[in-house]
Image (cartoon, rainbow over all chains, first blue to last red; front, top):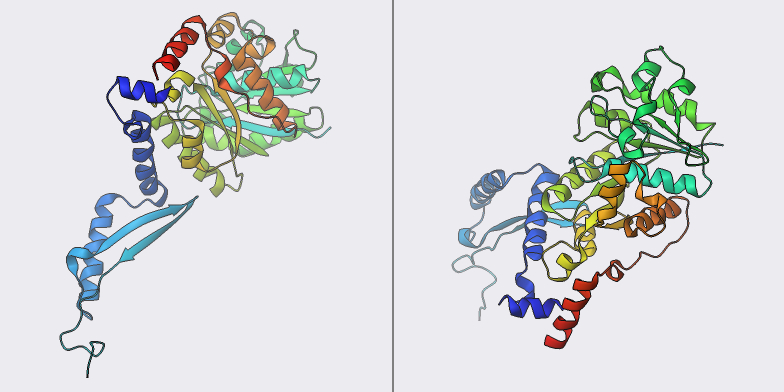
Length: 94
Length: 267
């Protein structure tokens, strides 16, 4: 039935307004629940990059800082790719 | 008797708190339970008109709290039901005329005489909300499958947990199954994914609700109303019965059936 309407309206089942509503809600609620607005996230990201770069070389472009949620528990997840040190000890050596 | 105090709240206004309170009260009373409703929306009372008892108000909740009337004098008996009473809100006062400890005292005085004390909330999360949450043993959160109502419900879920009154139980009100089917309304599953609290009822959109509110006779009094049935199911679940959630699908009118048939043959 929904497939019929979807085809009639020329959209895929994933592209419904209910899906959009759900995704928007999930995003806004992560910030509501933690009281961390997107602007603060950006600030956090910049500062984390600055602090970590003082000690190790990181791929600044590849840094991801996200709020995630499992049920009603929130956590801040940082994914920070390191750059290989030139001539670093873990490179293959003879 | 030791009444259970159940507060019906939502955050957002207009989602059906008062309608839910009136209907659950009528449903419980119809099952032989002794029920009293308190209108916690001081200054904007409405539970009286929804229940059809507006012409019988002499004293209200604020009169009781301020000592001008005894609790029993402010209780209006609904003569259509065996044991159903309403304590109306004051209309010309504000939320600050009652405190959370006043509400706890009033409810404690009612506990020995009733099976259920149902409290209808004002919209919002300020003083009026704190008043109605304070005495609650259980909280029912009413929402609609719509972004602003769900967002506000989420806020209420958090506040209730902070007050250690959680987890709230969810009522999803005004579900239009045809819109859900074509992907234009959040489904029950969507709302549950987002709010992550237990579900206690799903109420289909039903014109009978408006008609029954016009008349001051809650839909749960009517055998045939789908929404009324859904409210009766909530009452049974409150009592601890394991009632399966009804399919919202059978409520198709002639045109829906016809278009559904076309849709099937078409796809």
